Length: 252
Image (cartoon, rainbow, N blue to C red; front, side):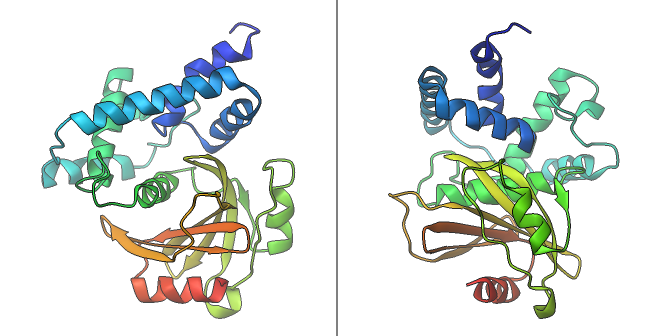
């Protein structure tokens, strides 16, 4: 590896756009982009190119049996990614790339390629939730104490995400991690409800962000969005919509 950080970032930016980086790597890329206009410009061009290609390519949904097979493979023990790799158990880099492509087919709903009639951020949030469920991806800090989780973000994010303890209401805090959504690094707070995982993504609200509350589902995963103060909140889970709404109401 050369001493030029931009050369390294150019190798990582595309992987970041494709969602192939672990949270720590994605956060490092985001930090570099904030201080490097050249790399930020490259990211913008790659995102625009990716969007143009996807808009022009007809979407063919993978057959149900193929989607199920990919999910079974990803759920097998030992399929955790290591830094810089994707699906090593598939046997080769080419098979790993194929697995990543099939996972996109498996988790993105019809219309997600061109965004017609869809909320694009909701697709990203649900995809981030599913990615986090892979082995060794869910938690960077394991703690049920809000006074442990909140300080953990200090120095790792340019903002201080609020953290709440909802254990008494039946939604215990499990910990947190750094994650990445379009626009930059994001705090991901992880809660539990029985055997269900709840990912709450928190970051400052963008100036152009629609403050209206949003609710819906993607591929069996429910999501909610709201803003409070200057913060934006997205929550995703396979928990039923009623209880997820209860969680959001408690948070608000």
